Image (cartoon, rainbow, N blue to C red; front, side, top):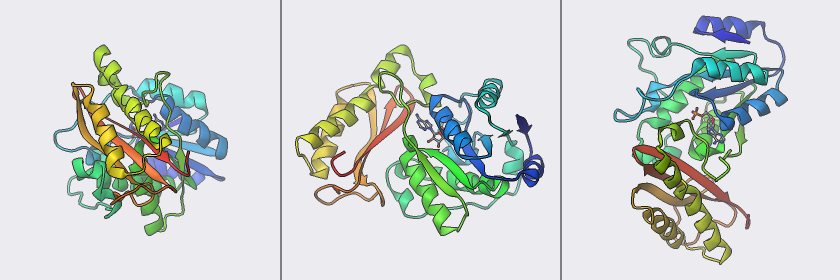
Length: 282
Ligand code: AMP
């Protein structure tokens, strides 16, 4: 496996490649969630590039950029074991040199959910992903549905900017007890780790209510809010029911053809997200 540490190294590596190229963009500190994307990419492409880049543009000023966990050697070993051809690990100064001023913005899908509490997050995500698409020129790029809104935003950007890339959604990978895997789970104490189960439990309560026939968006959100409040140390950012395509809220009843249940909850200092999509009774 090659390690590519500069834009030029990435470009010249890419020039020599023939066949299908798959890209898996990550911020590193890999877990089974990332590995599920990598495995799918290895299965579906002749060559796979994994990028490891903790992207400052997608962190807000009070967020965890400086303490975001890193373990490059372990990540490199895991990628090599999975059959990845190249690890792209560019330097921040090369991606955002002095004088940098170009950003990509998806305007509407970013007005909801995480976009409200993290107003510059998605423009950071879109900017880095667009750069990666330019440099890696993948035929397919793999994104986890754990970050459902991110997936929809990237899908939109690809359509709007005519990127010749197929955006492949991958299911949420969970710990045995139901907690969605995340590099940020590492921040949790043992107590916090137990409290973090409130996210999965809350989604289960919404699912139970759906099974009982509840369809009012307001009532479903109320049930989710109440569930999060049952853990006093958990702090709710949002518990929303939204159209799974547009991410818009509902006036009355939810859309039976595709409804997103999305949660963002602080446990201790850590902001955790989770979601489920309910579609045609499933
Ligand atoms: P990150 O390193 O957190 O930016 O994540 C890189 C990619 O892995 C994104 O497309 C995420 O959606 C995906 N991912 C992270 N956690 C999970 C998970 N638990 N299940 C599936 N995909 C995930």
